[in-house]
Image 1 (cartoon, rainbow, N blue to C red):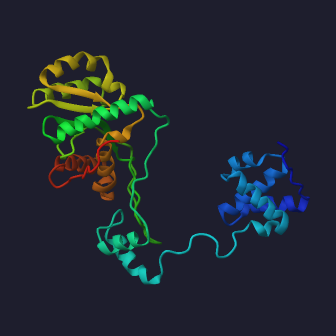
Image 2 (cartoon, rainbow, N blue to C red):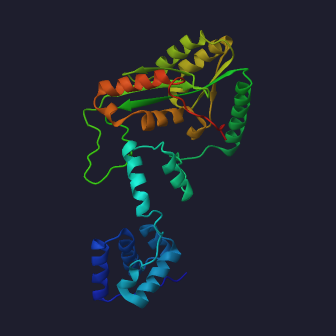
Image 3 (cartoon, rainbow, N blue to C red):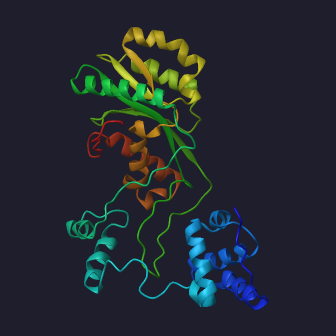
Length: 322
């Protein structure tokens, strides 16, 4: 396919370069860059990859430039999303933010956002690859069977994994007003590692350590736990080496004789493990900025939160894995 090459005068090229370097908005700068790249003989698809546009958008802005010059690359007045708030909402929103910067329990604020079509949903991380469709279907089917047995009270079903907290680590987002200085103090990193298991009724089992969690520590924990179970118990784990080590494989027949079974979810499927929700909620909602003041306060807050799971602190695991 023949690529259309845009011919620019030296003054136009200089003007576009200046707009690309100093433009007031990212969109305007990318449009200037798109026109410059087209003048170098690149295809619209290639230009789109460089400027985060579709090929159709690239062609549209090039045509706009040809007819209107660089002024045509500015967003016209009236374009874009219209404001969803007016001054009458400002006081209610400001008071709600001041009362709780990371989340709001005020019904009026929740109603306001729902009224304008917003939903508070998690922004997920996505693994770099995907599991085999056949393996995923098989494993999720088996997991659903375990969930049904757990619902009927025939088995215990825990979800387990490792996590950690550190003094440098998890910095939550929170609303701040101009001139405010809300921060988490920074110090030399100290880390507390956690291995935990939780079920849908918020029963938690686990341990914390300042040392690395290796297969031997997991074996020791599961060995001790296997003597405390009162019915068949399944522990859902991912495929990390610490969970499938030779020491684990050696102990599995022993544990199974005692009624403790390990179930491995498909690779690249962390969303199937509800303990990931526990770590996210603990770090993002249960911890306060002042808990990060030093290692002692953070580690105390961690142990306090883990001890309160099922009592003062609960998570509603409403949905089964899918």
